[in-house]
Image 1 (cartoon, rainbow, N blue to C red):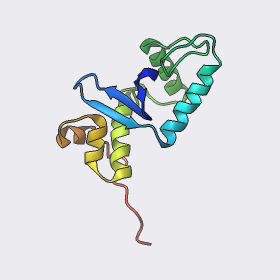
Image 2: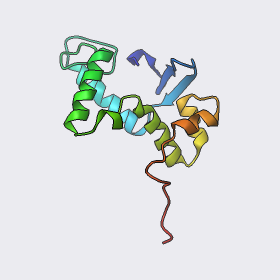
Image 3: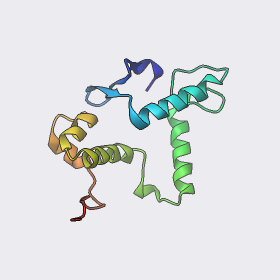
Length: 134
């Protein structure tokens, strides 16, 4: 993603595999995060339009991000087979379905054309989330 994809308080993206276009509203925690990133980047001499940059302001490459992700996972004591970068997409879909109570919203966020595909992404290893009787 790139700062140039932000227009009208929305993050405009086109997904790589399907080409599906999405406009993600910049609200809530996403707004807080992007504001924090912009403030941090404003202090660097080097200016990059990429949101994730090194301490020097230089943009990160996929390899750099992958290496840091792997180190963080190891430091947390999580086995590689249990949590990988690609699992973050499934987590996003699962969280959206859980918080909204609507798999259609998860489907739209993930850019799937069918609910069947979204169902393959949704993780229910934690069990269905329910509320107590009282």
